[in-house]
Length: 153
Image 1 (cartoon, rainbow, N blue to C red):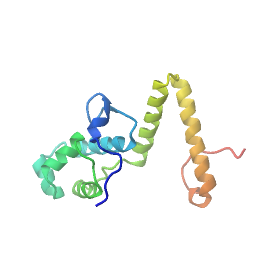
Image 2: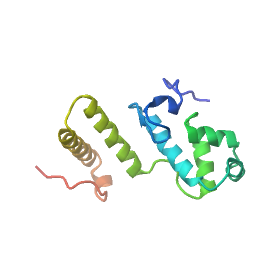
Image 3: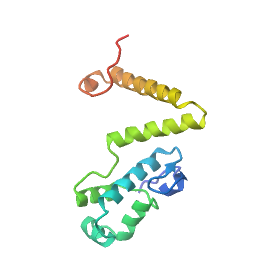
Image 4: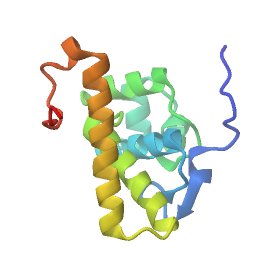
């Protein structure tokens, strides 16, 4: 079985401040994705017991509780079983992922002492540069995407 490289901590160990799953995290994208997944799982399971969730997803209630509390990393089998059981996506959506990247960048700028306005301008410029690179590298694939309107200059 493949092993994770350089991931020795649990998702909850990346909490910088606050309470999981709504805490501010260190800049480690896998932990951010695990946090969004945990938030989505907590929201989806609000009206069910862990025992009932375990039965529906064919998983142990303990595993579900560990995923909700950030004690363990979600794997593809768990994600798939839970999404089928809830009949809804739990993994971070494109919008959730984009928002998390923007928030991580904002936190980096804040720690570096950059003013909020300057940080927003830098994030917007970086996002535009990324879209431009995608358009240049994958012109056919990007033709129908809903990215920003780029200047031809």
